[in-house]
Image (tube, rainbow over all chains, first blue to last red; front, side, top):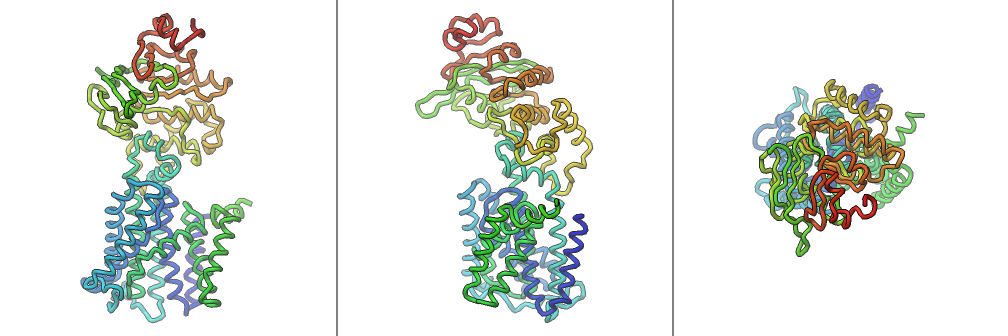
Length: 306
Length: 248
């Protein structure tokens, strides 16, 4: 059942290459955003870590991949690994400090980390290009396939990475670590009383999810061949959280559903009215919060059970 | 000495002393009850034993080793488990998943991101055995938040036993258990492993006198009396201060 769903999703994503071949740049952005929201689901949905700073890891991955392409090698897969490692490193180090805090304090600290990194990206212009960001690097072919003008290679690349990361996230969700994280979200005090090193479990998932967010950032840097301090934007973290809430937390598929819906509405509403598209998003969020508080995935549950 | 031992425990909050040079010994296999009026400092003492609260002075020893500086989770891993005054389970998870959490933790496997829950035959067999022991097999796949309160209390004890502790601290196990489910709780408590050291904090004197081999009476943070149940029941100060007319 789930395999059929996965295959259908994958087939649909591939089919879009023929249905809307002129929209692949946008669709690649959607895939990258799904990956970021997926990483957020591991942090918020599974472990219950309150964060509005997932962009810290997205931006770190993006800058690391761009710098790697500029100064070391334009080969995309090694750049992806470097981006993931850099983001996981940032998540680990910041997580060591952040995850001692709880609730609102934690939330504010996650925002602060992303803001500090953004300011560093802004100020260290000899390395990061400052407010203009980094550009001027051209990615080498991916396993022999050139990054073409229509974005086909980039789209397939992003789709492949997302599929692998999704498989990893699902494996994690069904693992002892995944169960421990759900336990921590439900009752952290009880987890202490079972002997669980709660803090280290949180640091672990924050680091792993940071790596996924870094993969999203690296994909963004590689497929657009441009990075700017906007990669650390608060609005990116916030929108990712809204997408996750729309889709449903702690379910993984919610990340896909919420992101696709949000970005589709954004895309079409902005085309109709470039100044007031946020109204459409606001109405959508309100409707979902009132009609399906557990997210759109919960509606699909009802439909499946019937 | 083997087992759990508290030596000269003092706990002050500002000018208020809630534990005043308390000594307590809990050798393997022994059932000790800690009783006293509300506010006597029983839960504070239990929290000091389990590592939730740090004492202002005094030491906690496990098998002779000083564990005063260990945090709660480390003490659990060292063999000290507890149940909660107000039932604390994972309400959104099934009872089986609740038990798996404890079993996985005891096996130090909760860090593993690639293994699969439900595919370890030893964990599954042990969970099934615990469910059977507690007569909870039928409730295995229900969310623990939906279980009747008596069953939740039993599940709480099952979770603690899944950790295979050497010391078990029961914080008011009978609190809130309806009369009809008390007998089952008593059976479970009476059938606890014989080599386990058990500290029972309890208001229900029937339960205390039925289970405990030794009773410690705590009043205003200090030990007022300590001894076998008969001696405590006969102690004039205890009768006056705490037991009142019920056992008089």
